[in-house]
Image (cartoon, rainbow, N blue to C red):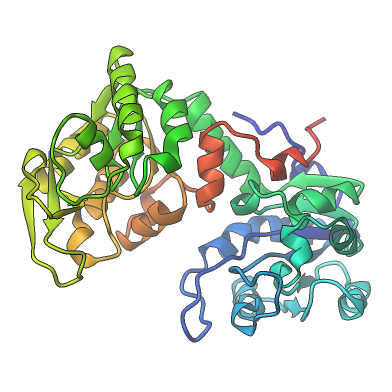
Length: 398
């Protein structure tokens, strides 16, 4: 599947200043050290392409939620240092993203130069999609490239505002790959096509469940959302997470899937805990024997075996949402075991960003996956088949 939007490889970039909206919203520790730079690395092909074509690069991004206020803990300065190390060349850093200092730095840029602007969200105009803020950003370049798939579902100044004020706009290589991988998996998958859906709540994934349910050959449900499906079958689930207002929906989805010949998998056992305390007593029980007052926290070994066998013959696997509370060691086994099974399948494997990407990384299987999305919420919206403002703002391919 080919993206319908104009892409960076179609542009003449010689002697052009190119504003690239990147997604450098990276995790930081308490000392403001970057703990995972994969989002920075993901943007390198687009940045390097501009340099190779004789252009200069003005990078803009958000980091965290500073809510329109200058917050030193959320400065992009550490990102500039890491980018400089990854590129092996100087990266200039501006202490704001608009204003005289930025204009001065930009005016002195030569082909091959790279400048990173300070956090866009230090200005309230970013999230408010303020036209004046967008127009000020737009004056910094001749060409606009959106490489931030992770924010493509947001109507912000840097995603839908800037394109109104520049003559040339396009999608970057990462944006192109994200859209083609996720849409391609849904619209034209190699079969058998297996969707693995986990995470906490059914309500957060209604659209994905409905959209994928019409297209997959098998669907595997795990994580906290599984207990809503299990309760809908009339089984007791103790104190496990449940959305009582979603019971009829869950039952209907399962029935519709089965009626269409889709194989529908739910956990057959689970790891339960007496309390939510990290040191609480745990045990493995069949799904129909969750003790009263206990909490389901992970899929059990029999479920791991069942789910692993379900993905064995797959040719396309799309996974969004962990199988349990994988951040805690006692409840990480199910998610990590499934990550190994997905990695070992002879299939195109697409990981839908967010917690799933983190889980696959912690399982040591990132390198074995065909594609890992950089956008959690954006990936969900695309998989639902919903409108993506950041994409819609770009011109169509000629």
